[in-house]
Image 1: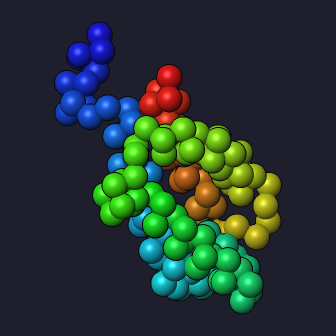
Image 2: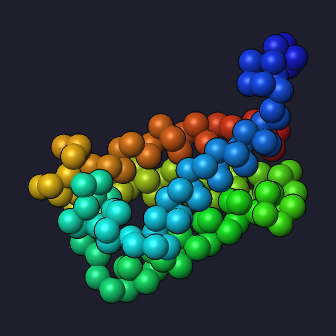
Amino acid sequence: SAETALAIRGGASAEEITCITMCGVYSFFGITLALAPKFFWGPNSKFCYWAEMDDSGVWFARASGIWMTVVTSAPWTFGADMSLLTKLYLPINALLMVMFCQAAFSLKSTGPAPQSLLPFNMWLTQLPIAAGILAANVMAVM
């Protein structure tokens, strides 16, 4: 029942779970992208997401990181409405799922690099995370 599901997840709604998870994942990634994308995720990093990253890639990673952090933390920093955000997030999460599949299985510039701690493409780790967020997001808007 709905009461059991709410009790299992500590009483949080699907909207709250979606927004909390989006903030946790994308603010962490966003802050690291905004500060030093090459250091954290670039060709020489231990967790290489991009085996190639020129100055324009660094610039765009920083801009994207700022956006990710500001928007996903907005319910707590600016009082943004979670119901509205979950509607906004749904097409974004659906399209990101497709793009993460592309990065994991098609792109040749997404690692792993020789010094990576994990011997596989790091975008593979994003697939279950993105699927979980997308599932929560779908439940939030239904």
